[in-house]
Length: 193
Image (cartoon, rainbow, N blue to C red; front, top):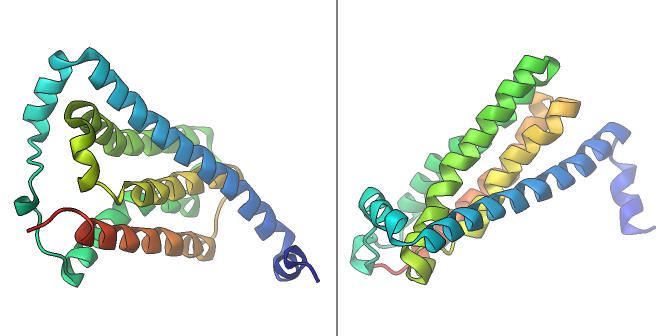
């Protein structure tokens, strides 16, 4: 029996449809997040000093290993606990029924986009202002963006199909796992004292 046959034998037609739609939605969200990150970085880099100076003042990043705490489990758990609600809240939209009405879908779309922009644009702007010196301090970014895309992708999928609380919990698991892994990387792999 082929591997695809094994997986499909245990899935209902609606869950396989939900999964297939989710995979495409996640990929589109992930690509969009990276495009927004790169767009913000390119804008700041191209405009140069008129944008980079205020961004330096606003963000006040001190890229110095002595500013980063030593690795530890508590730090990893704090990072995950901070990031999970920021990334996973779109799962609640389908459970609450936001997809049932045009106004609910439009409002939810705006909220998800605003959340993505609020998280992604400052990072992209920081890349534009600080350049490659920022790279050692954000090795966790691909995993954080993947988790952000999972939350956004869940809404993109559930705006058409809805989602049960059980399906929402199933979507929360990979988000939490990605963010715990991102926390480990952020804690252990960044330069620290």
